[in-house]
Length: 286
Length: 353
Image (cartoon, rainbow over the protein chains, first blue to last red):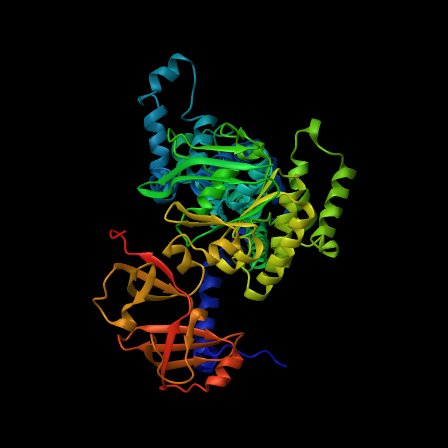
């Protein structure tokens, strides 16, 4: 017995030349806009050989940029995991006034240009800003320093985790939680043993996307960073500086790290998406 | 463990789910809360469980074994709650699901790993799913899931077992098997149980006593026999099976049918309800006191033959009879027949009583 094709496939079938043309156009487009730039990054980085490539990472400024990027992402991602879980738990499992407002608020970082978000922090914490005088008095620096970069990164990457979990939590409703509570579980036990495992793959998916964006963020960080070499330069900012100085090998070498990060993210993302689909389809009809 | 609820009110916004409900469930009894959707039966069950609260300040009370449990939350009441859509933990195997209620106990009162394992095995035997302990809920059929949900609820050795439409999402055949199984199980373990259902057949078959609810109030409490044969209200009679409605009057304690004697008979106006199996079709044509009607439809597939008649007032009458009687009568569609009620329940019209 061969599987029957869905009845619509025959009616929807296009002539061969149409298929070839459309698929060809798609491949050409992808190559030109995605594969070619990616290849360029690596060829340019390796133009003067592996020695020059690795030498770029020995530069203290490059190291400091990498460290700062890891630090910013290392703070922003866990913070957004906590915020994202809290927000989606509240939105997915409870009804309250202003719920749709909260959902829109979570999306603001997507809607606002990153440069504007950076500027907001300058206006708040900069020398002339609302809290500027107070910060100076207490000898604290936010803008043109690491705290500003972390704040800007958290803001820009805020929606990633929440966005992934909210739909899942909404769909799963709260019947399993009620069952857990009725069996005597505490709130924390219910969260850890029931709620969290049910969203684990979506959470990881959100974390991966959040991390990629946190490490690659340019606009907002650029505004608050001040571009102080060896101090407040993240990897994307460092790439820009090197490029402007015509230090192409070093610029593309650092860029290649970001490209590798992107490729890795893409790979994990694909696996996770498959994993999520699998758990969803195995749940089947209830 | 007996359960008593006293004077429970519950409103959701401006919807009155419960309007002063009181009832008592005896120790070891299986009680069914029966009613249409929106009658408040699930709300009442959730209030007994502690998943919902009665309206604050309404003075309602829930008592287990004579003691108020108002102050304690659902986890402290030790109730086994079985949800309509099972609510099994999808990330846990069957065995883990059943063990959950024991594993989350505080360390001091938690049984040992070995004790938990034994308890799980014992419950798996009880629900006859010994071989499926490592399966996940998604790999089980609906009936198996519901049995796991029941075992999970029983694992905590609940003082009372509360079942919210436990078989509602299953197909008819599985449902029948499961409810017979549930009844046998109850006879074995004798835990006080409350079952919510909108299926009258289920309630009548499984329960020791049935509580018929309508619009947030209790219409009648009684054994299946009582509620079926002595319905306290028109609603109960209609909800527990098909009925034919006749208008008429009560004269000297006897029902008089308008359809038979014409309008304008003296006496108190009344609604006369007749079960389809209490309507008799006469073999030999016209009979005194019988209604003239025409056969519209015959459905003979089933335990009883169902015949649909239409009387002179263009009202539909439903008649049920055994196959032997049907063959004897030799009914044909469009045939003219006479039928008369053997027995009718009389409810006087509201406002006239």
